[in-house]
Image (cartoon, rainbow, N blue to C red):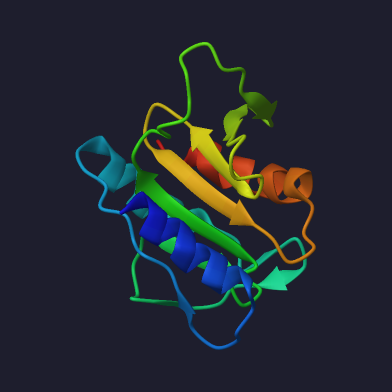
Length: 140
């Protein structure tokens, strides 16, 4: 299932225009409330890209710039992340950069894991800095 998700996000990054296909995650437990809150905090534009729509529609998915940036809230802990891995802290939020997928970052919070795929000429540091505010506030 993880491979299918990455494939769908990569297809979105190809910038085919219109609605972007992104497989929504299925958060459970406390992550549901945190992701519902995050959905209300996300910006209308991100790093100069306007918010788009995804298919199937889900409160746990957000896309900007025809899928150049895709966010999924409530994903499982990254399989590649080891307990000793260093997280990049940006504005108080720890981000795991997947060494096997250079466009994939995961926010590691107590409330939920938030996966962000960044492509299309966007600078990851800028995107993650803008998203760190809402992600940091999603737990309440």
